[in-house]
Image (tube, rainbow, N blue to C red; front, top):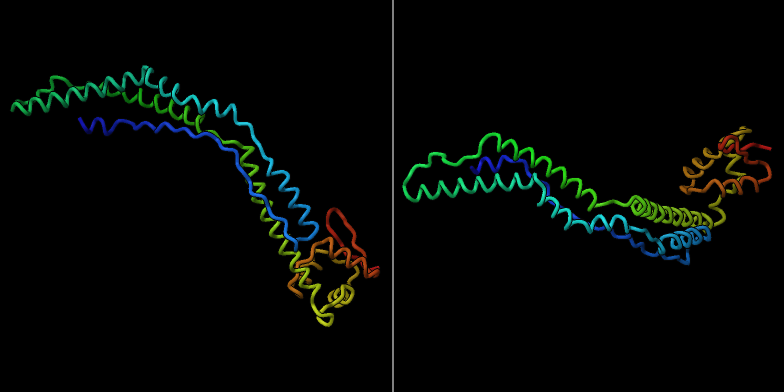
Length: 242
């Protein structure tokens, strides 16, 4: 009898978990941050410190847990399962009673094959009901998940901006004899070229000084030489000799 019970399909656990609105930490504006970084941090704080999401509809589904459990217990499928378990329990009680009195159990009461099949079918249906209820009582909010991804990205971006700005400050604080002005740098790396990519300038500058300069800063310094200009052709920046 125990084998019969053990081999019946297992019902999933009924679960319920209400959604919580994520709370985001304020990002501190540091005195060493650049103007651009400070502006970005204030924008991020303004957006996320006041974040709110309406979960009323989903919370209502979560609150249906007692009704859902009641519906399962009242269903014909659960009655079929309950009757089968009661029949098996009756068999077990009968076997133990016969054993106590030293008599042989002759399978006077035993679940029929059709009863076992009917019970298995009922359990499959019940499992479907429970899975459906669980999906409603454990909702996921796409808006909240998107907000958390965006906040985490913003934190990483702020860290990158701070690192880039720190590198630029180190370059600016170098002694004059350690610096190479942009005109000297371009003439040294592109002595005869009349047209080359700004992305290549950025790469060579990083390889030479281990400093990452943004396209905006490179463009300003190149134009300031008055011997080169920067042009945008189909979103690809070219440096041209005048």
